[in-house]
Image 1 (cartoon, rainbow, N blue to C red):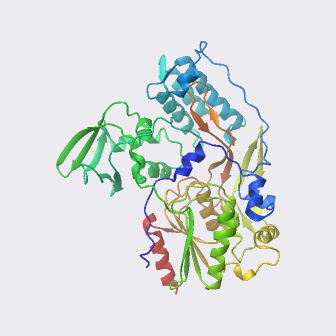
Image 2 (image 1 turned 120 degrees about the vertical axis):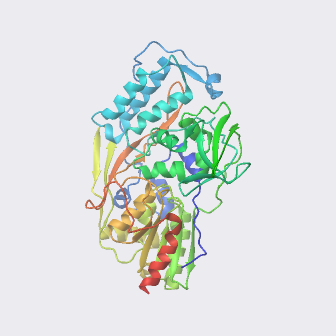
Image 3 (image 1 turned 90 degrees about the vertical axis):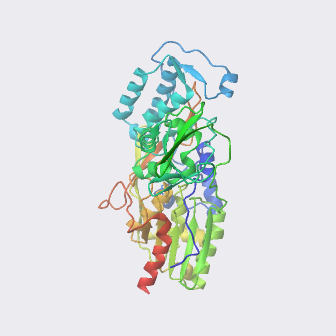
Length: 492
């Protein structure tokens, strides 16, 4: 068993928030940088990339507002939005209709019509609108509507002014939130504004886009500093403009204290590289840490090839791909990794439906050996040394934070019998939505930004659970690597 490599649950990297605020698509120009030439289109398409040659043909128009004429908002008002910013009921209806219109025109599940669960929720929300609606209230309303899509990637982003937090840290341990700093260090947080932690979680789940509960559990419980940011409290309905009452408990002692939201640094920020590896020659294992799925020169031509060359030179028999801190990115990064395995015949990626206007394009996910070999040549050169291809055991380490493309990574290895998944169920479904539309949508009045998707992916092996990727060896995320060492030792 190895004690050198430690796993700690940490916050989603800051780049995730940055990506949510800008639109990116995987273009051929990016692919040229990766391989020195255009990768085989069929292979990359089967890897579920949001490629530029899948051109959108639909144009959306603003819907008719089912209410009285709205009152315009000045640019200065929009620029200076704050926690007290309000719009009229009619403007809120216009915003809700705008969101529904985008879903109708873009979302993969709304080719024929917007799902009834979504429209029914929207009708209920409109019926309950007050004459004046705060931007936070509208954010919560639209979040409740989008949750009905059961699409973890379609969501409305929190207002930018919700950027503070409670002035103490917590960790989730043995089913409790433990305060780890300040006056109440060591106490358990039991309630906020007299709402129990478990009740807050139920509220959070009704406002946070997800496909399976492992993702909401991770986002609420397992990312400790994510429990106390202002945006999360506001999403749960806590008024952060006033002092917040927090209830603490230690044994039989119960204490309450009011805190102001503070703009202080979020804890547990990691300076760890997004990609790295280590070789343990003694135990014949290479640990390849990938904290995001990116496709660029650093990944494909520098770190990845260096790793496999060193594995080959040192005759390493085992590889562990550490995806425990990986919340996703570009799926072609999986394709580039998998072609480095020696014994491949035919690969199968996820069955995919991609919306293109009013039609669905389908891909069965099958990739032939010819296509695999073409990609190897583009990556390694025509006369590449075949000894660099790996011929040993592969383990995939997962946690509830393993999400989106990172979940695909583990699924491709498990369902093609290329590797053993060790750890926890990843955070999204195997029949998940993806392919975020490369546009930033903004509600006309509240100026809330939201994203939606145009792809639906289905499990490679239809005989397995379509919703959850259950690891071959289930252990807690923090114990996954040590478990791999145990497995290696037992087979030696």
